[in-house]
Image 1 (cartoon, rainbow, N blue to C red):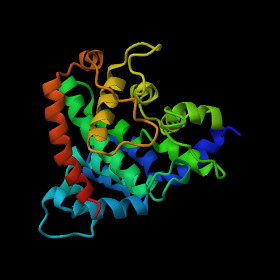
Image 2: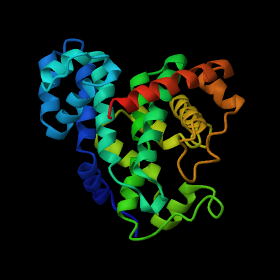
Image 3: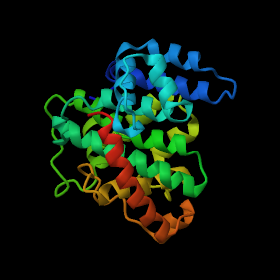
Image 4: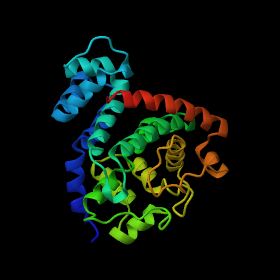
Length: 276
């Protein structure tokens, strides 16, 4: 039976309560007059998120020498420019807590794919001159719908690419909805910008029937970068072909894509180290 919008939202809020905070944080950070205490007050509303932010602020990612257990110190140390990315990492870590039996997908692979895609999307968006923060967010959260469908699968298992090359087609036949559609439902509910929702909605076919979408194309290329790292997700093997049309739409050359891939790999390692 197809999950209802109400059940999707209920499960999403239980699985990733920090995602809603992530969205509200972005809105705060758009205010040039926002003050540090406002950011701290928002994060402090979620004890689990507070724990993650403090722990990550103590990581090698920020080159710290003295550890802290204070949220105020952690946010001040990280700075407003990086706190958005840090909270995003904390939000997606809430999602990637268990293996997805439906997809034969270990939680660690889901996490690594999200982080690698986000790192690549951030860099590619800067080259494409579009909102890097939104691209990073799309990379982190694009697969949250798989977690929701896994919780509704009741023993159903994706048979693999040999039988169903497109996981989206299998999801549609099995659940009446794709994991990407589930994700966009949640992103809309969490009040992320329409540009981000559309990018996730169209990233499998950024040149498709709905018309070319530059942000979706950047996300598609970023997914391809994650696949280069050997971190692809089951059933997506044929979705990330790097074509001249995609590069043209994204405003990126092959050389720039290669450079972004190399830099994204290094950044991916640093991001992963922040949660150890």
